Structure formats: structure tokens, C-alpha cells
Amino acid sequence: MRPLTLKATVLGGLLASVAVVSAQATPVTFSGIDANGSAFTPLSSTPNADAARNDFFSNLNGVGTETFETLSGSAPLTVNFGAAGTATLNGSGSVVSVTPGTTNGAGRYSVPSASSSRYWEVTAGGAGTFSLAFSSPIAAFGFYGIDIGDFNGTVTLELTDTSSNVTSLTVPTAASNVADGSVLYFGFYDLTTQYTSITFATTGGTGDVFAFDNFSIGSAQQVIPNPVPEPMSLAVIGTGLLGLRLVRRRRG
Image (cartoon, rainbow, N blue to C red; front, side):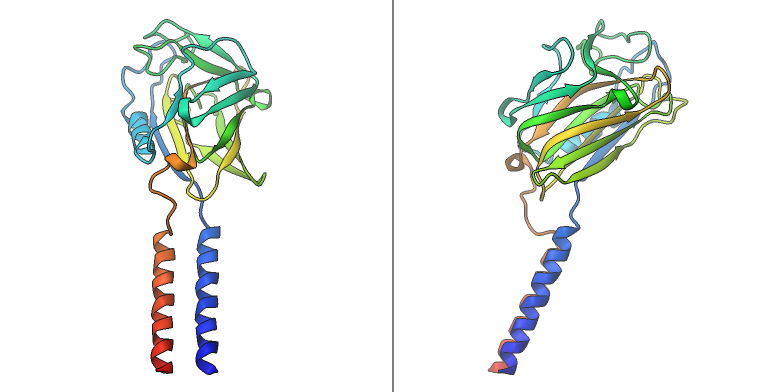
């Protein structure tokens, strides 16, 4: 009977180890910042932000993006992500329009500024919270942020999953002395968890205002790589299988 006991021990340790690795899984994030320092001149290019966006997109098999170019007014608004579904935009904020290639005179503009004019604008601080409630759970989300951090403002994403658990992600920003008119991109995907809503929690000094543009989402089916065991999980499984082979040899 001893070989059977050893086999049960190996299997139990294998399953416990895999469970620990799975519990440690977190969203994979992407970020890039292009500093500006000007309230009146938009950046002509945003290579760092665009690179972060491209890296994020490379992990998605298709992506749905809301550019705000066909929207107007304030929340609640329905935003359309194509095949990935829709979302209801709730809370404070409104769609603002500027002439393409210009700012609103305070560092905010649409991305890409040379060809687009509309973006989502919100006053930072406790009253500046807004959220997206998705029609179907998502596993990936990304966006541009413009003019964030010039008054030491911050953005935190609060992700509510399908079990009503909340995960917080801090969005990096430019240094305050060059944040005026700066552009950032932030995105994430998650191989293990899906989310029903995302809340943008903001802080900032008196009169601080943020701009956001090009919200993109992806469903679990659109995320690549596919949900497979992480490298550590594969190593644990390999060790477990080796242990089972040794047990069989002893029995033989």
C-alpha cells in the first residue's frame, strides 16, 4: 500500500502548488508616457504612448475602440466597442471638442490630435469619478490619458470582477513639471479573471481637469496568448509527473 500513499502525496502536492500559482496571477499591464510641458501646443507624435498601445494590442486578436468622435453630451452615455460589446459610461464628465491639431488652451486635446477632435473630459478629485459598466465581461482594457499630473493629479483604475472582487491599478503619469499637455497610454489584460466594470478614481488640485481618449476593450476570447498554465505552473506539473514516474518504477 505504500506506493499508493506516495502517489497520493505527489498528486496532492502537485495540485496544491498549481493552486498557489493560479492564486498569484494578476493583470498584465502596459504603459508609456510622452511628456510635453505646454498647455497650448499638442504633441505632434506620441512614440512612447503608441508603443505601449501597440504592445497591448499585440496581445489581442482584434480590439474594439471607442474614439468619441461620434458622441456628444455627458454621462450616462452608451459607448460602442464593436464585436467586443458596449458599455454604459456613468458618473461625471462630458465629451469635449477642439479643432484638430490644437489644444483647448489648457493642455487638453484629442488623440491623435492631427485628425481627431473629441475626447472625454472630467474634473479631477472625488467628484471626478466615472465608470464603465460593460454589457459582457471583459479581460482587456486600454486608453489614452492627456494632461494628467500637472497638478500632481493621479488616476487609479478599480476593476470589479465577475465575483464582485475589486482590483486596483495605479496609472503612471508624467512628472508634474512636464505633465501639462502630456500623453500617456495604459492598458492591461488578464488571463484568469474577467471584469464587469471599471471605475476611474481621480485626484488632483483645485481646477485640475483630465482628458481621456480611445477606450479599447477585449473579451477573454480575444486575448492571446490563450489561457494556458504559466511557466512556473508548467515546471510544477513536470516535477509532479517525474515523481509519478518514480513511484511507478518502485512499484514495478
